[in-house]
Amino acid sequence: MEIFEEAQHLLPSAEAYIKQKFYGEGTGHDWFHIERVKTLALKICDQEGANPALVTLIALLHDLGDRKLHNNDDTAAPRLIGQWMRNNGASAVLTGLVIEEISLLSYKGEAVDQRPKTLEGQIVQDADRLDAMGAIGIARTFAYGGAKGRLLYHPEISPKTGMDAQAYKTETGPTVNHFYEKLLLLKDRMNTATGKKMAEGRHAVMEGFLRQFFSEWQGKK
Ligand code: ADP
Ligand code: NI
Image (cartoon, rainbow, N blue to C red; front, side, top):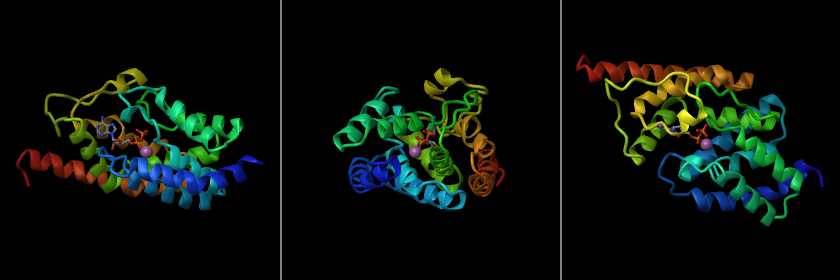
């Protein structure tokens, strides 16, 4: 069976598995994040002419075993994705491809510009990043910070520039810093023309939010 057909066959069980596993996740990586990423990715896929079955499979599995949800353990994702795919009869070729694409998808710091190799993986990276931006991105970011017990903002703790993977992974600064360390950098790192276009509006929403946030912080508005 060729891999696109194989991916298509795996979709119902992948969706059922991920839905129950991520349903009530409390750091902004709940099932509805996965579902939004899937919807956005399919929308981009339609414009860019990639394979929708592979796009959907990568979108559904993209946060399975993510290190942020597994005490920073980078081995959890390949292990859990591999296990699920093997248990569901996926070939070694498709399993290897999905694991590799997902390992390249996650944001790893300003100094690391990593992109999936296939157009399908790149589309899911764009979709995942769009869901980190705009109104939803703002909400998810403060949900994550709250779940990790972080401050909203601290005027004396500046955002860090140029973080590498290790520095980014262990960063525990205030949540507003995350906008400068990741979220505002995303619009210039989109892979597809469709993703780039959608990122612009969401970027502007975050800029407006931050302007208002600092005015309110200083009691100006
Ligand atoms: P990625 O794998 O690219 O990080 P995810 O789907 O795992 O993408 O979601 C990342 C989201 O988690 C961020 O966009 C943000 O909302 C939240 N997040 C991650 N790290 C932090 C942080 N240090 N502070 C606040 N939010 C964070
Ligand atoms: Ni995600």
